[in-house]
Every structure is written in structure tokens, then in C-alpha cells.
Image 1 (cartoon, helix red, strand yellow):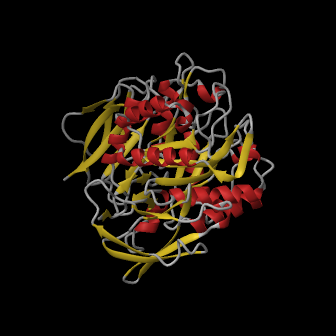
Image 2 (cartoon, rainbow, N blue to C red):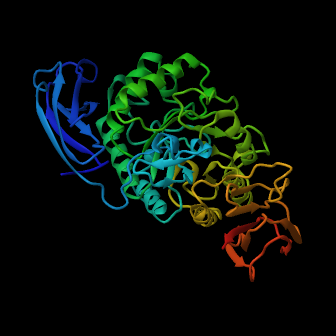
Image 3 (cartoon, one colour):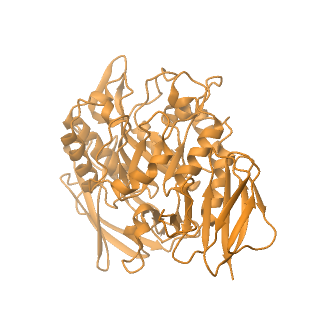
Length: 497
């Protein structure tokens, strides 16, 4: 029995002569009534092959293998799929892909749902090279994530060579080593088995694996692979990993720091991924300075690094307008104390950027870079030491409580609920919900012209101290509320009948 959205797999034995990674192809088409899903099998070394399949609905799925190896050809397969259990929601997809057109709103294009229609709001973190650390650090990372608010992790397949990252991993994606070179035609099964194990463990924790396929921080040659080798690698990565429901594809971290790869290359790689991915997982590409054209149809959401030294989450408003799809600021600077400006902002500032971006209708990813510890979370994983995670957890609860169709407030002259100087998330059509965020500001009082005929309960939210203070009584008409003259406050209004 295989649970819906989980993995059915079968092991097969075939030839190990020559180079099966290059010479042998294997596929199967799983059929359930009128639905058909074609998958590619893959080689695991020592004559071992595997077919995987993620059933999208309950019932009996049958398939017959096809291969140019007679030992793998014409094998009948059957998968009995049972309904998803509680907590198993399937893939994350753009909300507009899940909702029927009649139920979609203008705001739908900017958000995500699980495959079963459950809301998904990404609160991500960054652990670039955690799977390239010793096994005990990988386990420690998972234990830390278990009690964290994060439901998405940005992570690389290839190891990272950069400041504070100078050691070799135990295993590489390709056979070989730095001293003797790599065989670019053969993959290392031990590496891929461990990667799959970690992705599955993240799924158990309810965490999406945002897989970075290529990046520039390299001394081993992975960033300098030619186009043919890139395609060879991408096909294998997608064939093995696309069956995990919690996988997202990020073509590159800082694609513009790989100038020897052209835009035509990236567009080709996107087509390869789309052809090989049997399920249509989320796809993005991430920048350093120069933005990719996120209006490209293959891009499901904009994965963005801030491009201004100071202005970060404030840009969510203009990026939404420009790209018309979900905005995920995957690098808005990190809490820490290193030399570089991208890794030495305070916990207060990172928390402010999270609030600012969420209120403006986007999503952000966390990172932490404190040099006094043996492991630095941003790359190694291990333990968290910063002040942000618990405050991000508090924000996550606030956002989960907001109406699913809440949207950034439009500033119009006739809208008395609009305050031009602070962002607001609200339900304007029925005036039922307003969440204002004050960020740097610290007013002693605030005046509002509440919507005509509406009565509200009002709460003061201290986003840093994580407290919610409900003001006594209810409010209507022209009002003035006292504020504590503190930064990082929010005001939440809920209409009552």
C-alpha cells in the first residue's frame, strides 16, 4: 500500500556493463482510469535500478516498464494507493493553479496552496551546505528544524566553497574527489542516497526542500561544467528527486555570478526540468545583483535577493506589480556579525523585514551568520543562536490567523482606513480585517476613521516582545488610540457584529 502523495518504488536489476548512467534509459507510464503519469527510472550503481512514482489520487495504478535493456523491459508494476493521512497535503503549488477560476481572486496569483487545497505560507531559512557536513551535524540540523518555525529550507546539492566554507565533504554528487578529479559521466550513489534520506526527513517534519541545482561558490569544477554535463546532471537529479512531494527547484543561487552560462542556457535547463519532472514542482531562479526576468512562464514564483543596501522587503509591493506571481525574498540579509553587509544585521532588523514583507503580501527567508560558533547556520546548519526564530514563529501565527484572501491595502483618497505611512494587510471588500505595521515608527497615539457602519475590536501587537494587548471595548467612527511610543508595533482590527 502506498499513501497518496507518498512514494511507490520498486527495485530492478539490469546491466552494469559499460556506463548505464549514459547508456540505459528506463521509464514507465502509471495509469489510473483516465489519468496517466509517465516517470523516468534511474541507475543506482552495481546493476541496481529504481522506478519511483508519486500517486496523485487513491486507487490502483498499473504500469509496464520500457527500456533499451532487455532485463528492464516489459515488467508489469502495480501500485495500490490509499487516501492521504492527516498532515499529508501533497505538493505546494501556486494558489491560482489549485483554485477553480470561479473561486480565484486577484490576490490568488500571489500565494500558495498545498495540492489538497490547504493554505501554505512559506517561512523559510537558509542552510546552503548542510547535507555536505558530517552526519552528526546533519542530524543536529534536523533536530533544530524540528522545533523551529521554518517550513522551507534553501539547500544546495553541490558543496559550497566560500568564506567559512573551506572543507571537503565526505561524498560528492559525481564519482571522484578533488585530488584525483571527477568522472563527469558517473554519479556517486552514496551521495544521492543520503540526499534522498534528508529530503524525506524534511518531509516528515513538514518542511519543503528548496533544492538549489547550481551555484558559483566552487573550487571543484561543478560550476564550470559545460552545457552537456549540466543537462546530464539535471536529468539525473530530477529523475531521482521529483517524486518527493516537498521538493522545489531553484535553478541557481545567484545565477548572474555564473556569467559563462547564458540566458539561453538557463532557459534550456528550465525546459529540461519541466520535461523530466512528472509532477510540475515549483520552479525559480535566484539573483545576486541582476534580476532574472521573473515574468518567464516557466518561473512559478520570484525568488529574490535584495538589490539595495537598505531597501529590502519594502520592494515586495513593486515586485508584485511587476511580476504578477508569488514573491519570495529568499535573501533579505541575515542576522549575524560577519564582515559582510549581507550577514550582520540585527535580529530586530531581520524581524522587521519579515513583518514588512508579509504585510505587503510577500514571503521571506531567514538566515543566521554568527562567526563565534563552530557551525554557521546559513551554510552548515547545526544549531540556531539568533534572536529571530521565535519572533518569526510569532509572526507565523499572526499570519495564519489572517484571512486567506487578505491583501495589501490600496491607498486611495476615498479610503479612510488607509494610512499612507504604514503598510496594511486587510479585507477591504467587507472591511472585516486590518493589520497595520509601524516598523521604525513609534507614535504616541494614532487616529482612524473607521469604516461607516462597522464596529471593531482592536489589539496592540508588540512584534519584538511577542505580546498582544486587547484594548477594552469596541470602536467605531472617528477614534484615537494610545500607542506605547515603541518601535516594531502593529495594530490589528477585527470587525464585530
